[in-house]
Image (cartoon, rainbow, N blue to C red):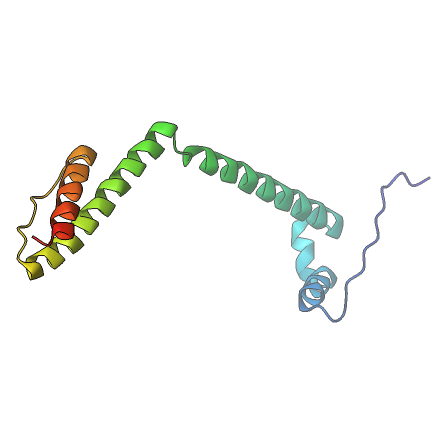
Length: 127
């Protein structure tokens, strides 16, 4: 009695990839891999290992790119300083047109906030 494990599958004649796979399995080229059964089993296992490897790599990549809360807080501060600098630049540009003295460059959130408050007040006062 045959103790083989069997599975049947169908190639679709309207799918070019199926036609390509079918033609390969029917060719003599598959013989260099031992047998059709061996080739198909090896191909499936290789594909499964590839997918599993990609899933593991994707998870490892996601873990390595996670930002800590300190990193996020630092980035927020950097963005805030850049936004404040840009606002100061715009106000300074407008102030120069109105004859208002420009504020110096800032290096911290506190300096930026003070400079921004000063510039806004001067702008509102029309100085």
